[in-house]
Length: 166
Image (cartoon, rainbow, N blue to C red; front, side, top):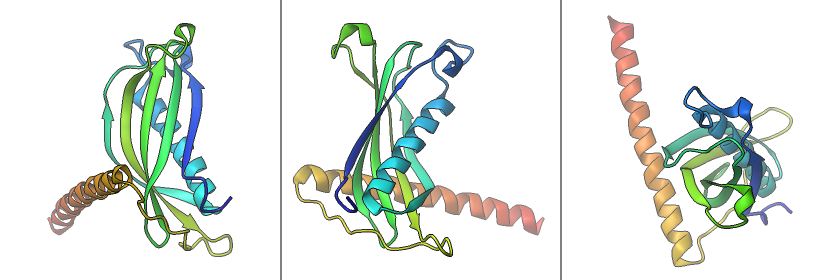
């Protein structure tokens, strides 16, 4: 299956223990679901143990309510030598309404790196290349999101270095 499972979706039921003081699902719970789905997708593509290295461009668009059926979909949109970027959409709906009423709740790009089993060092993953205009658009989007994240990391490093010098 290595290098063949490009998309994966997991479903979760939003439970009372998942909510914040406002009665909606905690952002942290949603992020956990994203990480779990991303890991399963990265494992399916690489066939290797993987670790999360970055989440970029996360946007909470709409709340998730108790009892909602939540679908977290991950789609491979870029590969590096040992890294994989997935576009992730989180949708939710009231399961009593069938397929109607599904809404986008969260979106992000998540990056995983595959590790070898012996030393835990980064190891190559199967390459993926965009084959359609939509694939190219998603790959460009993922690269742009991660470039923005690198800029944030550089800014944080500058502040950290300035604090160390003080």
